[in-house]
Amino acid sequence: MRDHALRRLPVVDEGRIVGLLSLGDIASTPHAQEVLIALNNAPANH
Image 1: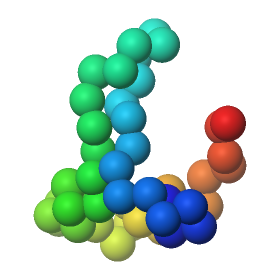
Image 2: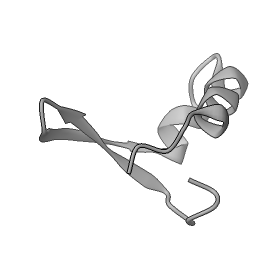
Image 3: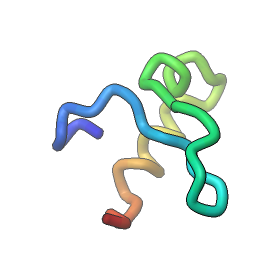
C-alpha cells in the first residue's frame, strides 16, 4: 500500500468486490502492528 500510495484495497470474494479495506480500518484493530507487518511481507498478487 505504501509503495503505490494506496489508502484503500478492495476485498474480493470469488472475483467479486464485496468491500473496501482502508488504512484506518487496519489502524483501528488491536493488532494493527502485526497486520501491517503481514501486509508488508506478503507477496504481490497482481
